[in-house]
Length: 191
Length: 360
Image 1 (cartoon, each protein chain N blue to C red):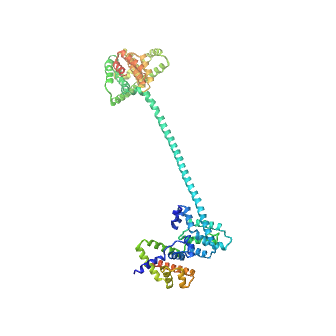
Image 2: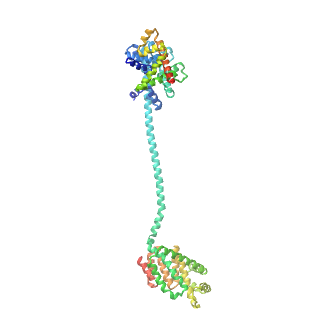
Image 3: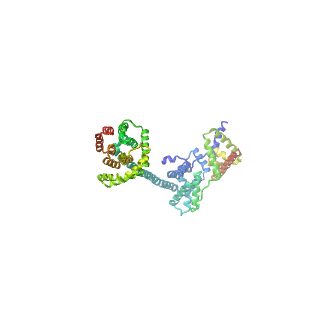
């Protein structure tokens, strides 16, 4: 059972945990993201001596499990980070997780791209529209996206070329991608 | 164009979803032990995913990676441990619930089955109880089952008054032989369809009504006689009859007045035997009525009285009717004896009695 469940996608596991009250699916999902959760939480544990990992992680998992049943989860990584930050920032307050508009736009485009993978006509249409959106993007963003995605340049190469730090580079790439997504979506509405 | 084709496909790469870094990708990326393609994919994902990027940054700052490994192992073990008992407990609970449900269903089934059986049993028992009394009656009524006999029982009384009624109108002594000899044979021989039987029954009823209307007085007299007869023995009854004979005379005088239009002028001497015959006739008719009403024991009493009191053809007829009554009561020995007596008397009823004897 465990073996079969590990092959399922996050979405599938969430729906199983919700509809069938499947604790195993929930556990597999937690297991899948446990190392990231640990890695993200380590600095907090280090900085705050009061936090005991034997208490923090079980209660974090409990909170995740509780919100899994009730919340709309588009992307598990965003949701986990939100819960973790909420728990460590204000442990007594349980702030619900709302995915951002940009996040939903991105997810929508990702889904359409995923669907177009098996449909040649859709894919051609999508490629044309994406290139149109890319043309509309300003030169700087267009350049960085082309370099990173189309030329397969790594962070190290780009930071060497532009002289930006990795963090700045990442945030710039993220912003450019966001703009592209917005342009693409608006194009879709205009059309 | 050819060179732009792969370029075109790569555009889609910008928005392709990539999974988060798994447990061994993360340290390998940190160590730079990934292939170029893998590294590029990881970096693409890192641009989007805050969780992975934060984790990466945290691990880069971390001095001792053993801590991370240790905590991760602990957490995974914790997750596994917390899932499995729960899921095991859940499965056991589900199984026990199923079994319980099955048991419940079984108990419900048996309870319903027993209730159904009980109700069915009661129903059948009630039906049986309801049907039993008729069975007994049937058993008792078996002797009368023969349709020929029952017809004879019914028809014989029907026939007899027919013979006897016109007699007071015509001369009683001379007229006796011919119709009584002929009619019982006809009664016995000719098969009677229902319509004839009904007609005769209607005629009989009409006669009875006439008789009642004609002689209310005589009926009261008869009743008096009967009452007194019940009280006293047969011998005394005879004496009383003799005593009463003077009494009915004035009444009888009234009776002939009523009957006058029918009979031809009669001599005063003949009045006495006529009244005797008349009283016999009415006794006989009353007994007949009892017999037809099904009050056989009363009828038998009456016939016995007629047999002991009166004389002539009424004795014979009373005996014959007595025999029929006994037969329909199921007392075959008595009935046979009576029929034999009737045959021995060698009267008008001889043939009918012989036939009845033969058919018994």
